[in-house]
Length: 438
Image 1 (cartoon, one colour):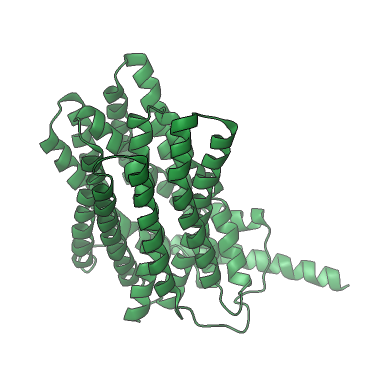
Image 2 (cartoon, rainbow, N blue to C red):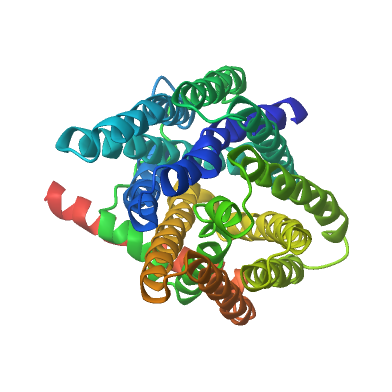
């Protein structure tokens, strides 16, 4: 089991590191060095999450349609290939934008590059999280902790590598950074997928649901609906800063491209520390208690970062980054454990797909809101730093709201409601089948 956990960690890391050059370097280059509006950059970065509803369909479809006896591995492989393909194409597209400006060709290629990564992310993430839930039902929390521990190590190493490659920014250096990360992701993905999933001669489920029925299986359950909204608000705050943190540091604190890229390493190191502490806390506190601690930590981190927009201080900024990383780490472990609890064994893919869709929608909302608010306030006040500061304060407010929602989440009530809903769908399908046979 430990080897399979390591393989899951490699797969998770492979998909995650393909985002590093997008989120820690490319956004900074496009906003500051190339002078592209933050709204346009966040639209491109958030474009992948427009496809997020497909996660529910992919999860449900994979539950019923194994390929060569495998229900998860083929979808993970397709997703990883799309992520890497998007990473290979992105720096070339940015280079074309730099020389040709925005044309029909560069716009289409931008959508293809960012969209390929997004579709790949949706395919892969719902599949490997479902696989993690199925392979180790009794040790889900430990499996998730290992997966994310390995992922953060991969992100730290990738960010440090990318920062070293683009120490002196150039188009060729940017391309080299993306290709290095892409090749590493492919290698880890291949090792992770080898014989990780046992073959099955039959389908796990023959039930067929329409998309509306799949979606209503989650949203018609009051607890499912609450948890979905909770994830959207919480993750919009935690993930909405991805696009703006590096350019903020460059503008407010005059940090170089290499220095802002290393922010990811600092943030990731603090996340690793949080993962280690979360393992100790899980034996002493409830999952929701750990989630509350994480949310409060991230909230304080955002406030500290926002203050540096008013009173420039690298010391306070790095403190805010560290506290934000620590809070995000505790929040990640606890909420993923909670997410896996908010499933039922008969339809793991369906519910994992729904929670994955909440994750993607939150990125879409958080990043679009960040870009639009930053640009709008920059235009009104004439100060880009003011726009960034307000965004970080809004994200702190989102976290505060999520803390109130967390108090009302009840796993047992969700399980009871979801089981009743799926039994109703099964009865309805049986009636349709009987009518058809007549």
